[in-house]
Each structure stands twice: as C-alpha cells, then as structure tokens.
Image (cartoon, rainbow, N blue to C red; front, side):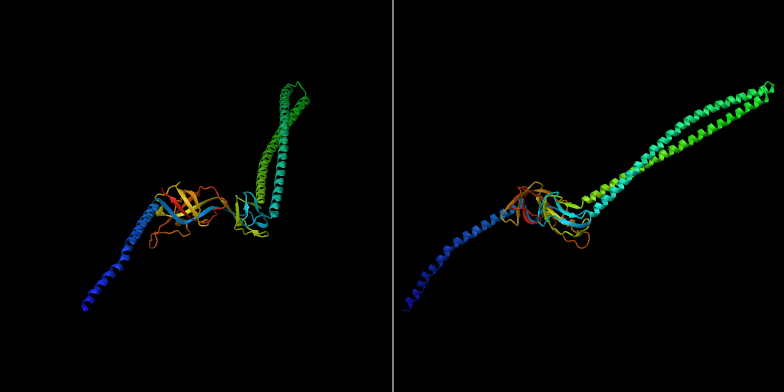
Length: 378
C-alpha cells in the first residue's frame, strides 16, 4: 500500500505546478511592452528636449519694463493744490500740483520795476547824447565864425603894420607930422591886440568843442552801459517769470500717477520727488540670459513671452537688443576678479525684447511683472 501512495504524490505536484505558472507566463509580454513603450517615450522626450534646447533659449529671470517719469518741482514753496489722485490716468501737460506763487510773483514785480528804471536810464542817456551833439555842432559853428574874425583881424593888423612902416619912413623925411605917426602906431597896436584876442577866442572855442566832443563820447558810452543794464534786467525778468511758471507742475507724459507722496499745505524743496508717472503703452521685457545662452542669439529673432499674471496666455515679440555689459558690472559693488580668491560664476546679460502683439486692454502689461521668455534661435 505504501508504494501507490508514493506514486500519487508526485503526480499531484506535476498537475499543480503548471497551473500556478500559467498566469505569470501570460503577464510577462505586457510588462515588456510597457517597458518598451516607456523606453521609446523617454527616448522621444529626451530627443525632443535636446532638440528644443539646442534651438531655443529660455529663462524666467525676466520682467516687464517701461518708462517711469519722476515728477520733481523746480522751485521751493508751499503746495496750494494737488490735482490728481493715486493711480489716476493723466495726459501730458495736465496739471498735477500747484505751488503757492506769491513769493515768485513778488520777484517778477520787482524785476519788472528794475527793468523800467533801466529803460528810463537809457532814455536819459540818449537825451544827454542829443544835447551834447547840439553843443558840439554849436561849438563847431562858433569856431568857424571866430576863425573868420581871426582872418579879418590878421588882415587889419597887417594893414596897420604896413601903414606904420610907411608913416615911419615919411616921418624920417619930415613929410608927415609926429601926430600922424602916433596915430598910425596906435592903430597898429589896436589891430595887433584885436588879432591876439581873436586868436584866443578861436583857441577857447576849439577847447570847448573838444570838451563837447568828449562829453558826446562819454554819453554814448553811457547809452551802451544803460542798454546793457536793460538787457540784464530783462533777462532777470524772464528768469523770474520762468520761475513763476514752475509753480505749476504738469505731467511730462501720458501715464498713470504712482507713488504719490505730496499733499496740500506741504512745503516742498526744488528737486524733491512728488510722484511718478508710469507709461502703460510703451512697455518691453528685459530678460537676463546666461552668457552661455547667447552664442546664437541675434537681434530680430522671434520670442514667446508668458506672463505670470496671465497663465496660459502667450505674447509674441522679438529680440530688440543685447546689453553691452553684464548686469553685475552695473551693480553697486561690481566684482573685481583681480582681488581675493577667484570663483567663476556664470554671468547674465540683459536682453531687451519688444512685444509685437497689439496692446490688449484686458491684459495690460504692467511694469515689474514677472515673465518667462523663449527665444527661437533658428
């Protein structure tokens, strides 16, 4: 009886072993297929990734940039009015802040009075020139008359001297009386005195004419000095009026009021920041690429931009320009590799990207927004 039992046991095991091995044998092909698909998919993904990054440069170290205009007063004074509010849209030339103009207006009035005095001084100098010119003309006319008298006196004196010489010869011959000779001598003396007097008058008239000419020249110079004073005072008046115009602070460009820190009644200094105007229309993107990503980057290459504020929305643009230096060179403390221990750090180059899509009012690009960019290197 023991022998049949020993023969049955192996038979049962032979029947159970194939039944337990059959499901495992059926699952092995599916596992291999799945592993094969994973390997193929991983290879395709890896190839696509390598191909993508060999033809594209990406970075999320990028922000939206734009024009931010600081609004600064050019004159000091108390603020009389603030005409705008925070985040208010304004147009170029629109009044933002008014400063009390009382002191500036007083300065304008003072300069206007000084200009009027200078102009009056010019008028007086011109009148003096006119009077001196008349004096010069009169002295010259008097000189001409006195010179004619001098000529006549010289002729009379020569005639009297000739008569005296003739009478003296006749007296020696006793052909005339002593009284006649004395009369001729007196006439000669009188003619000589008249000649000397006429000569003195001519010299005095010439001296007066020279003095009048000198006064005319001096008064002409006074006109020049007075006119220069007028020009100076007119320039001061224009400067005062310009300072008065600065009491009204206007918007330098279209944009939105931001960072307003001025209120009515506040005393402000010239050059003190009052607020800023942020332009919302002209914006661009500055992306900081690693220097190893720039070997194929060129101006004009297409760019796709994704803004963190608008997930799933793609903006299109192009490379506008590449910075001439790394961002580190413009930092407050630029690195100096010639000092200390050198550690090589990959630098980043700012790249300007302009958006080519038309502005979308529903998705405005605000300055400072974080973005991700993809540059098609071709």
